[in-house]
Image 1: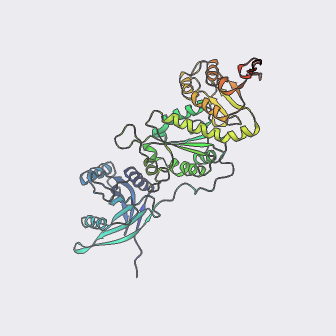
Image 2 (image 1 turned 180 degrees about the vertical axis):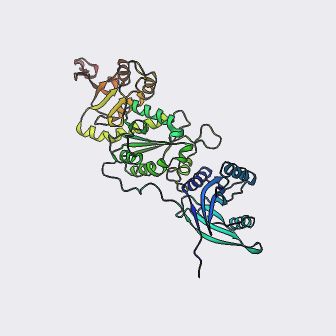
Image 3 (image 1 turned 90 degrees about the vertical axis):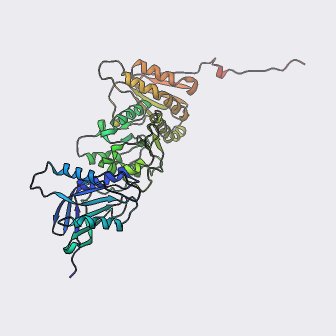
Length: 452
């Protein structure tokens, strides 16, 4: 009678630890030790510890035994004496999908000879169809060992499979979605949010726009209700963001298949020891897309360069103009700008205006926020270029703003570049510039021939 294959049951915490460490170390191999307990000939893995190796290469991992013993002792020390969890095996990664090598098998057999129960070997290959390969080795009499291929059980994803995008998921006047890991990406998200708003783009960000309810449901609503663009901020800790990896990124990639959508990748991960060059392979690696080059093949902005933020603002501004220019030209209508410098900004501000300039509000008092004015100073030249590119016969500005903001906007949008300008005040009165009758642009130069 054939015995059933043994099983290695990997708990969610162990699975995540292995996948995260593998992503951080690519393209090198990574590895460590498995902790858990045994059930007859099966092994249950509750935890996985990563053990660094100074000798790791793209096809070799050598465990540091001294470091491994120290990590194991540190893990077991605070646990109760009757806790069943202990050392149950080894794990390492294969950057190129493949089964355990003869060297792997020999190593786990050697470890099993000194043990008192079955030991598991897990080989993890990122991106592979069945990402885990498993073996269980057991010592028998006379120093022999028996090794059998094991099935590997992992917990199902807590996320439902993504369906197709609904109609209207991409909308030319929709907000820009900012995706990031809060732990180390909040400051970058804050700065980009304020720059984009100051330039006239409406932004969706969880800090202000995530409504009460189940997070995944609210995110799904935001990602499918009509966006114009997205910014993915890639930081080192994004490797541990399940929400970004499993929900936000897949939807953003779906949206980016539509030419009317623009996805910007803001890369903050340094390459090697450099302070100014970013690692263009990092987004795929940290978001567990590797070995595919889905994000490496898209345009990435180097956020280690001080000009990186402005490059993203410029790209998204011009994308918005490109989307709206055909309608402006076909209808011959005004280019519309709404300005606000006091109320807080929300994604619900998105409306029919071509640009909606919002200044970061002051934390107290009635004067404009100095920080908000600095964001405006950095973006006004871009806004002026974008309005000029729209090639509209007239600009219409409305809303409510401090006088200093209005003066700054007027200086950035001179009549000499754009022609007629209409300003609608808070009472609804329209103040329009007109070309005077003696304007040099309308003067004709007549040349008469001399008398014969």
